[in-house]
Length: 334
Image (cartoon, rainbow, N blue to C red; front, side):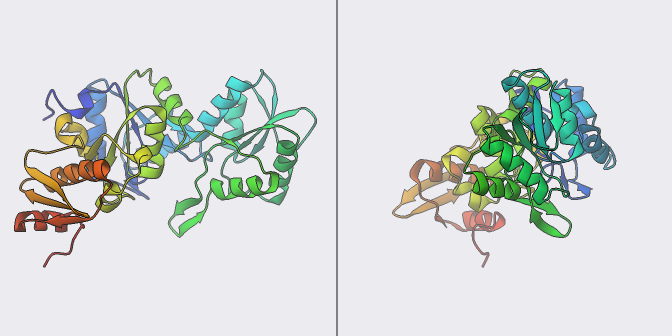
């Protein structure tokens, strides 16, 4: 049962990362479908926010429905949409934009009232670059000519790698790096960890107080911080208790939960900060903790102390704390 103080009641939209937050590869994370159903029943808008610029929103929604997760195309916000919005705000209607990317990216450029092209010409005023497995030297060469001629350059994202079932493969950021090296120019970035994607997602939901939820500090949480939005980090994906304790200021969330189920918990319980059940003190070059209660409560208290002091080494003062640290993977159980 959701309490009146639950986190989901505090915000009018939830902007969700996908891989590591909603699903793992082809499998949904247990309980996600029910949590999202509860959000919608309360009138909270849901947006699935992805850096993937190669797939249309309808395709992403179809993938989610295939996992029994309710989703509509208009609930999906992609970095291609964010890039097209950036272009639309800076260019004139019908301006020509040289596209390096998949057809889905070209469709978003067209939807923004611009004309996508694939080759350099005197009338090309911008370059937009998103991931496509078909991108080759010729595509990069055309883009390099346009960028060197002064065209506005917008990158959908700068993810160095792309997770696949075979492992990590070169992502759009690797192709962006090639153009950066060839031209000496820097692109405007639309996707995570830059702000435009989150602003586009929040605006599409008509939200005035949106919450970002994700598993990665360097993309999801950093993007939320840059966009001026509160963030909930979940530990179902990339980041760990150890990396949270050591998080840089630009990558620090407001809330912390084990998984998306945290949306139904009391907001005050999820805040990163001191906890009544746990005491953390600075002792030389270590944080010394003691107390009892939920291990995630201890982690919230440790993050607060580490971020305040800059000290990330942790020690337990009693057996209960030692076991809680072991549960969090911060020490080895004896």
